[in-house]
Length: 288
Image (tube, rainbow, N blue to C red; front, side, top):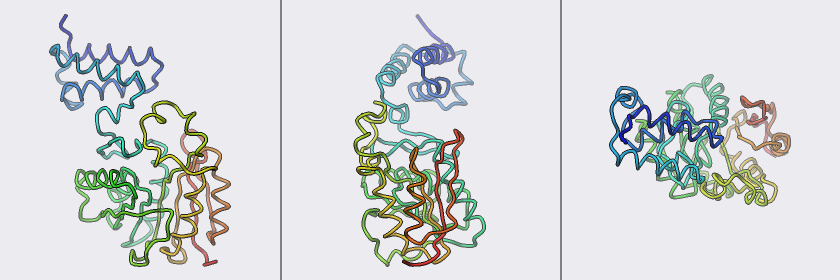
């Protein structure tokens, strides 16, 4: 039986809601748009037209894969962060709204600077650094990432958002001391792996079975990358330069202590929209 695009969308939305998916409206729209090769505007415009059986079959197959655990962003190969369209693959974490707090806090500082250099370390898809570059025209941003697959995604996203003139990508291992040849940065932002190794098997299957463990595993207590970055990468900051971290639930106090032990002061903790401490940042006061 023939079905209109609008009814297909509504049917899929009902199916996702019945499965307990909170973002059913957004996810149903994205799945139908992708299956039918339409933009959001085109889907709304053509809502009363009939979708062919092949398009309907494709949409329903995507829904079944999603209900089995596969995230929508990996199914459609893209996601949005801070208003930017980003290519996404299973080699990078899916950008989450909580991480926008990290970008916004860094922007508040960068806005007070003139021309400046910013490093997004453990960049993944490049979402944080690209958000900063898109809003801060005086900033030159470097996306640093160890995974070659993630670096490819970073490069795609730099081009997709027309930021090639101000954003570069470089291979970097956050656990190792950087080369002085990288130069000095006014600000370093990082959303590093922070899940304790032993917690990974208990994660939601949509994360555990699909997102890259390399981008999740923060070591035994989840704090390995905070120790390494605060100690080894502070040399790329001038005195007064700032380091911004996203942190996991319950980690803010530990990260604050790590930063303080490495000579950072004026340390602040910022909560996300759910009231969870999500960002810790501070200023480099002195070398220890």
